[in-house]
Structures are given as C-alpha cells and as structure tokens.
Length: 88
Image 1 (cartoon, helix red, strand yellow):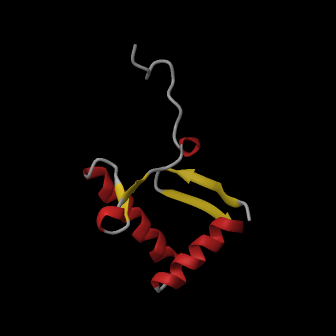
Image 2 (image 1 turned 90 degrees about the vertical axis):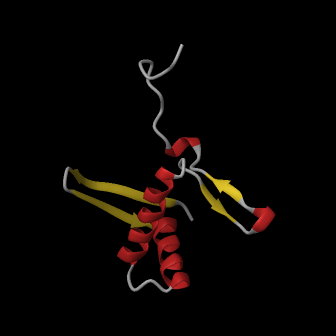
C-alpha cells in the first residue's frame, strides 16, 4: 500500500498533517505493537529518538550484538543541496 503524509498547515507554532494509506497503517501497527496509549504518543516517542540522535551524530542503530546496523533516511527524503551549499 502506498505511503501518504500530506502537509495541511505549516506555521511557526503548529504543524497539521494528514496520514493515510501505508503511513497510517504503520503508525497503527507501531502504536499497537509498542502498546502506546495513543498515536500522538507514538509520534512523540519517534520524535524523541530522532532528536536524541542529533547529539549522537545522527545515527540510529538497530539490531543486537554484531548484527547492529545504522539506519538512515533514503536520499529522496532529504533536502537537496543548492549550488550555494555545495563545496568546491
């Protein structure tokens, strides 16, 4: 199923998004599997993990022992560099 997050409103103090399709299914699965009390709390937890990873060099590891791997966002989820940001 396709993933879908739509930006409805993006202001300085408020962000409103619409989740449906695969993204909503993933959020529901995460909520149920982790037994979060709400979808909002599942999102709070995800944001906390991402925020905490900033101090750790923006790396998140999954797995155990020798099986640990770094997970990173795919390139299509990241900002593209502009000419002024590129180094010569």
